[in-house]
Length: 242
Image (cartoon, rainbow, N blue to C red; front, side, top):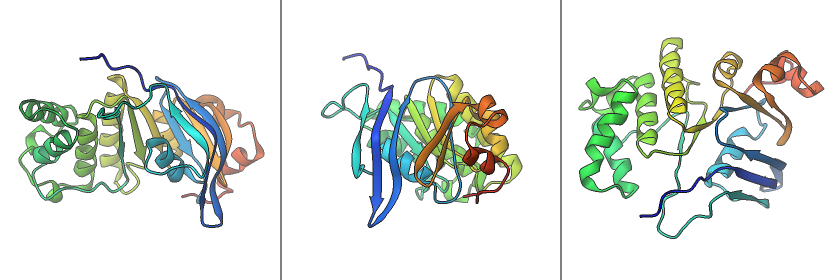
């Protein structure tokens, strides 16, 4: 078996995306490297979720191109995953939800249960392995979604506002899980509307407005020395939130 090669860096070159006559993402160029946790911020309608879906391959750009460091091989599943704000839970146990994701990914049947149990243990859900996924609390479901993604051993994990609908306690549990996944070596790319969360979890910030990448900076510099008037207005609450 060939040893896996790195997906990263991910390069976007003059990427645009149009929905009808409306431009959602406007000529974005950037390189995402392994390592730093990348937080994506921006006001309502900035194009954050669309940009993430373009990176993950759920959408194709209208113009420009996106390329990973390693071209996709025929029959090989790319080592990336995505978790949404409201994940879909299958009508089966928490353990079976993770096992099904592994089945779809082509993981041999005898590896699925131990990998699924290990993923559940990593997010603190071992005791709920046999409970129906749809009766779990919102925070537990989000941690299950993270376990389901992490079990795939992704090199890159895209997170689209994973704590937006959770209470503070559940959000803190999800944040701890994200920290654990990052510490294990997975690249985190995350959209959040929570500035405190971006400070806690982010190493670097991408700030979008009206589809444009306005600023990219280390988190400390972004929050303390914004480089543009748009960024400063956003941090002061003078631009609408998502």
